[in-house]
Image (cartoon, rainbow, N blue to C red; front, side, top):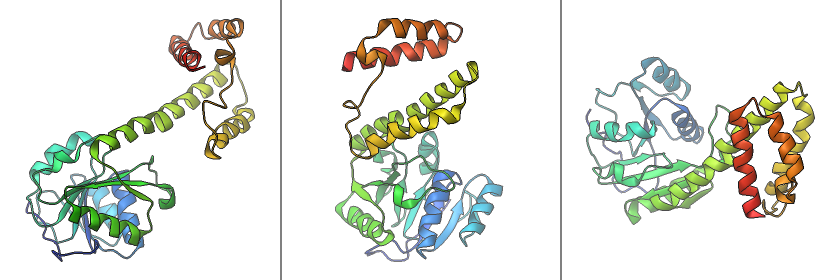
Length: 264
């Protein structure tokens, strides 16, 4: 695949973008740039059906990875983490800025490109994600690239921070706890509800209040309650007996309770 040349080598901001990928990140970034009238020059990928569908939504054109791509200022590799080395190897270098959007992958995966960067959305993306709720952690391999990214983020009105690869990985770890693991806890809550025919709706005010305290500025540790924090072993034993036939939930209960006791 031939490298796409930028429309302006001395850019003050990104004026056009090409996106490799057709998943949630590709949908988010194509929608973001398109909503600010920044042309999406192409959507490229291996899945023609999803690629053409996304391209039609943002007034763009679908290209396969084997085709020569139109010129643009930024090429965003919005693909799975494990696919980044392979995709980067396919693309020929040019004067465009090449960026990936993975939280746990170093900028070094794009080192073959003269101008490389990372634009990582610190959010679990979905079809209705509000851009105002998505902090972007950005990194460039030079002050020129970072200045370009900062200017572009300001144009887009995005909350952004300059964060290097090491610190971004730290944020990614914290995000796994904040999003993936907390949602797993809610899944476990739902499972307990099904086991004992509970009305999940009655638990929603508690769930809402728990997160609202932290979102309103409370220290999570300071507002922690429950039998593990109190050292209420009798209650914990009762709970564990109730989970006797669900070894997975029992192990989860023990692990979290052990963490809470160590932190109290």
